[in-house]
Length: 193
Image: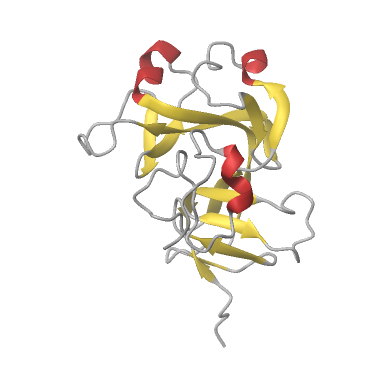
């Protein structure tokens, strides 16, 4: 019998923990899916800012990140490493050209190579967040189906064509608590029509 709770995931989806999820690593979290293949998935927790300033660990990048200019706790895996997610202003200009130091994931959202000099990549970005660690899980098939590891739900950013880092509004409204974690969020985001 098929598991009707299985969700079809894609890069850019938001995984939102339900109150029944008791794992302290993911309790009350919103995770942005960054990569997905047959071996599993990788994402970052959006709504866990730390007290560590980006300037304390990555000098020069503090002018690129949006307020608050702190590291975010991206998840329980590799917490001693940094992963940057940003939005490029070149989306839609030429789909075959990506800025140096930027790898597009979906729409205008991508991974920023923190080894690229800031003066090269920063002019192409409209915002960025730096995450210490990431969330990862296995059991994903090539169809994008996964077996839930705990109570949670997935949703698509709304509208999909909007930049998630600059306007994270979920169509189902379940990710309202994550708004403060994205750069450039409006104080009163639009509601679903």
